Length: 97
Image (cartoon, rainbow, N blue to C red):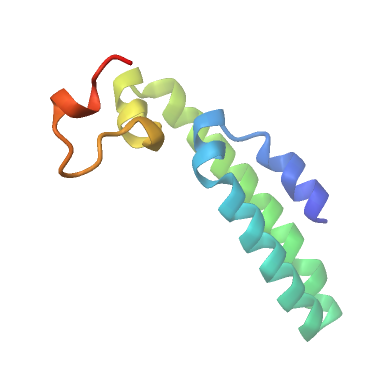
């Protein structure tokens, strides 16, 4: 069930998947283990519900990707490793190496 969820995560736009995919996979694994401890009915209903929610999320995100201007998506999902930390001046942070 986890493998199927991870395959469905590939339906999400790449920038969204990079930002939220690992957390979504971890949450699904935790919810699934909790459901298995409670009852068989929960363990069957949960993946079906989560798969449908993920399909809805993917369609919504692709619609947002298609309709949004590129700079809007960059503002939301920018690469945090390249962002200037608070307190670092522009002259220090953008020094050519």
